[in-house]
Length: 345
Image (tube, rainbow, N blue to C red; front, side, top):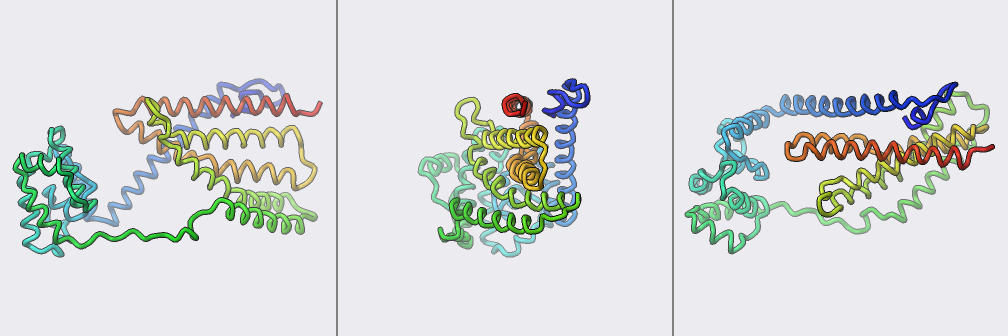
């Protein structure tokens, strides 16, 4: 796209409108593919999980009636407290009848609160998540408020007392956690071995052999790009104030990858390689490292997520516009610097 904007072909005329149309088609295709894949995944999931499909239909129906569904609750408690059809309850047989009676008392005492927009709904969610999900003690303030509203908190506690202990999260030994320096040294060793093999086999290469070995070289360059992308994701939501919603980590990864990619493309244009290694290295960095660093899939998922929520629809267009404009601008700047600053006379 950047090369088209600057001018390509025999007359070197700019094809800005074609490039803009390409951006539009690319985004429409990416978003459409994401929605299509998500829809197919839902179909397959519902086909192979009929009970969960039945629950999903019940959730949709109850939401249409104004009931709030706390989907964070465990499976049986979620279905029991929201009065789902007992035919989908294959876990309830494992819960003793007297404990179900205790949970039913709690359900009855708070049934009027489980409505969208009810002023006491947040308190109900806090209590149920604390006792049924987190398995922690209630705050004194929350307990006092529940008692003043005559909620049967004692029945809920009787039910929780009979629940099995929560599963403990495994404690990982620090030795097995990711270590940047050993990973870098291991990558260098792997790249060196791959380079020696490719160098030893670099005689009388056909066009197909060069392409295949370039792709193999790019595969080993993909690791550092993916690791850097993973580290940058931690910066999502790090901007403060009105821009706290902005996925800064994803944005930064895409900008870095775009600059590196166009730089490699430009270097390959102005310095035609006469041997295998220069062209293989530039293409490996472009396809492997920059390709793994950038993430169209996450970008499209974030845009679609913003657009799906009526409260953040504007943010979807802002994020989309800023990302495409910044990528195009940085790409043109990089192209200009390399072409006009390093091009041989």
